[in-house]
Image (cartoon, rainbow, N blue to C red):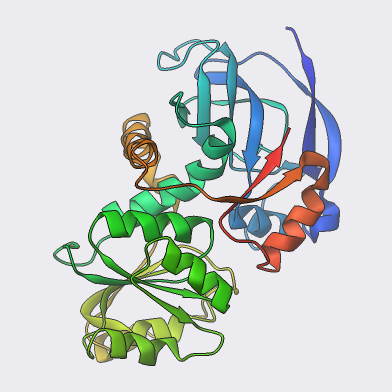
Length: 331
């Protein structure tokens, strides 16, 4: 079996950014249902920090990274949707995208349209597919119609800026929160109908003002602990609290009875990997994402680029919320 050397970022134990080490690993041929892909760019996400820190415990040693784009070099038995030489991008389990070359399951790897660059493909797959399942699949009772209010926390982040634009294209009134005036301005420039600086304003009170006291149909929350309680107060009766991240820490336990007292609310904890658990749903969601990006309705903002060897600094900046939009590792 032919093996090739690849630089990769590996951790041997959970901890801080200093655990991220550049190592040489050997990469072989793809087996059944697998492909070998040579990366041109790699995307960074908050889930990478959760896995590195141990919030999401993982077996060690661990090669981090959940999304990338590149060129298919070899195709294993049974893979029919990809060929050698195809431009491709993915968001996929298991982790391992922080590298030059890898063998991985082909199921979640999608052909990348020629109109979309490798950097854009690497930056948008996990975040764009997350925005897709939130706005199209994680819906309150009766769904979402033109003119409906939704609240989206961390609206200037990678998922948030995509969601702001996509919600505007759908005719929704997205209320975006962020932690600074500059980030609020960025969300507003990308389609948020209203913005709230939750570092200086009571976002629950502002939501009630904006919606004339009615509240929103759904809250999309990747912040977690710091925004949870007030987010519930922003919902209409029968509203949906959709949690999909824990940037400020995990949500503490709560008594389900409070949901009744606040208006018979619904609560859900979503993950992308449930939605892309099969080839058909992965491709359908990716096709939807590719369509809004190639049409120009959604632009992917890559606001930070780091060399693979500078991944420790990339993690520090992402964890400190110093970044906006999307971040990529260049190869």
